[in-house]
Length: 507
Image 1 (tube, rainbow, N blue to C red):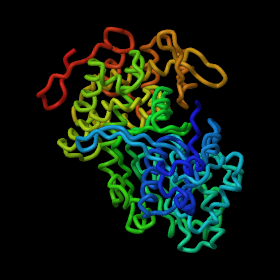
Image 2 (spheres, rainbow, N blue to C red):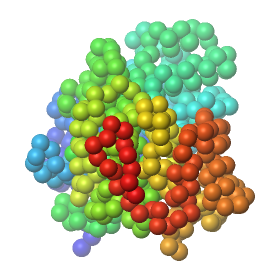
Image 3 (cartoon, rainbow, N blue to C red):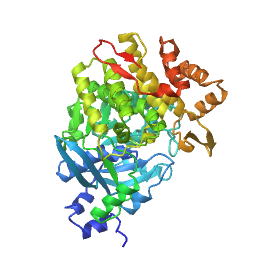
Image 4 (tube, rainbow, N blue to C red):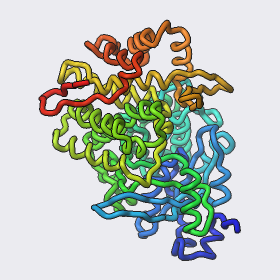
């Protein structure tokens, strides 16, 4: 017998799934969110939903689909309600629970219904903007903010804020709290600078620029929760069978959650959903939270994903079950990345955080696909790891051998063998994999024109336009990378020799 679809109608029939659902579904819209991804649904939307159920925030989210990929059919058929499976360990206790999230009110396509999105700017209750458009989404581009829609997210945001300004005649209380969740250092300031530049380029009203300056708050933030992509069929079938309904929007996450937001007391008052969960932190300075997460969790992900994937592994948890890759992951994090974080961090705090991350990686309930971590691989490598590499040289004046091993795996992963319909594919043991990175065309040309893997490494690593520095000028780093570009046996695990002030490596 087929299972019924999760929907408001099903909630009417099954009030046990979401008590008080009719009142929750009637709450006014207070947030506009650019992005439909699982991270947004698994963290910010989770906090909003939890607050609504506690009667704290009492507001729903308008979601803007701002890319051409995928569709909104599942959101439409389920009227934006979805299930969130939370599995892992918290305070020493195993957690396995399912949450019905009703925080999203509607999903709108920017390409098809831009006017409807601009209409949201006329809603006085809607005072919060959230986004996650990946690390490459917050860029200054040649955009037209008068287009329907503008091409870039900052262009869309500028147009939306200008519409807001006009709708309320630049009143003080019409200002917005804007919280980008992209993993970019000082993301709030960077997004703010781009919006101001777009306003100047388009000769927008000077009063609008003054309103932006005085009454809008661009808040850098840090999101930290492992929310893999679409769950595999086995997980979906198991959860669906246990719950007695079908959910095409099901997401799965770990228990751990953190959303650190840089903001004032005014920001805290607007983001009142923060009161519902200790995982929301609003402080004037979140640099420590950002650096620990960016350099250790995300940096390790980026250095390990290609290596583990090319070894034939598919998920992070599988990589932690394999003795060799588990040793690589732990050692590169704790012995090379943690001591070199480009920010003043207590070494004990860094080690404690790193060990906590390793426990999260071992979570058997989470099937975090390695190939999903490689999305925008090049931008992630540059942003997450190159600053740490430079800091490592400042502190130890030698090549980090495990870092070099992960970097070589990145270069190998970025070797397209098939280019079809605008997409690029690599090869793993005769099976294609998708290279979902804006730099894929660049690497396609570089691999085709390189005389050898060593030539490829030299040319890519010396490309200042790619890294903002010449990596071949770091003493010994090119040689360390090359050792893993040509010798298969060089991929054997490197063993750290403990007890030295600076990491000493013994092969």
